[in-house]
Length: 353
Image (cartoon, rainbow, N blue to C red; front, side, top):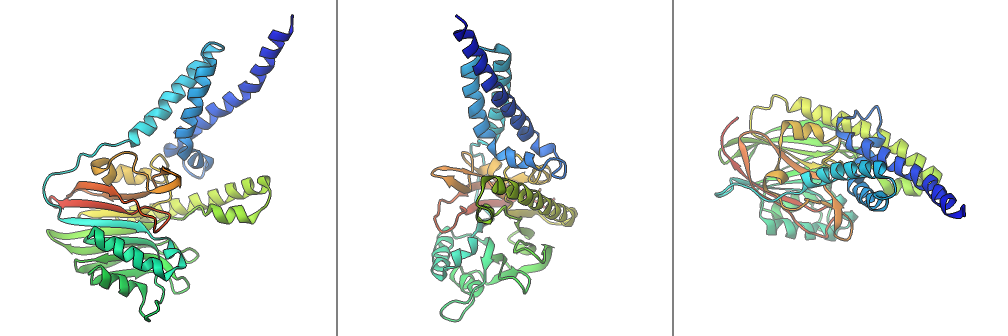
């Protein structure tokens, strides 16, 4: 006679810790954009998992709505909160009518996978898109078989005579920006000595006056390196946390520099690149607060720029813009030349801010 209640009681002790853990993870992930990385860096790691947490809340709600209504109500509230975050990133194109004044491609080319043949593939892709400005991250200015450097070769293939590549002499990777428009001024946003990541700001002579293009690449989490560092799950988990804390600190330092150096920029400005952070995070929040998001203005769907599993992915590549500009269209170009997808955005220069 006691087997039924005992079994139910035992089951409750099993799912209660799981339920409380799910609730705690969800609260931390939802609070990530408002939580400084120095207080609880794990929040920024949990934030990209919000869609998955929402699915678990749905399953728990379906399972417990007749067993424990109070807990089921909490699941329903968390499901709605997670759904709101996901729905906020879901977008239908608005855009502006008329002809664009400037089109810009931002693209993490992943060092061309150290394969010179990939440089030709990227050149063909970019030539097909016909942008006015190209901002590349993880650019490797390697020497080709014909003796030329990748920077000069791409500039010629894309018919973009104005180009800048920024890196330290001890590195071979960096950010490179190509333009059909003349370059008026070059400023460095950040150039760390121990990383390949960098940020450069070019002021161009645009079709309707000067316009700024910032090319930014924030520190990567480099999960593959962590996976090889230790063979045990415990060691990998600890190494992942230590690495995440360091990466988030470095990302925040670079974001602060970008915000400081662009605070009084006198012309319309586009900030683009690989931020290695999702929209719902502390790292990207300053960009969303100060600038407009090109995807929100002219994109479609969820804007995933970094594929993870099949059609599923995350959005970590962005183009932000200031007053004086309007977006006509935002396109994520499906391409297999890198582990990132390029973003093609067409702008109109409406007025000076």
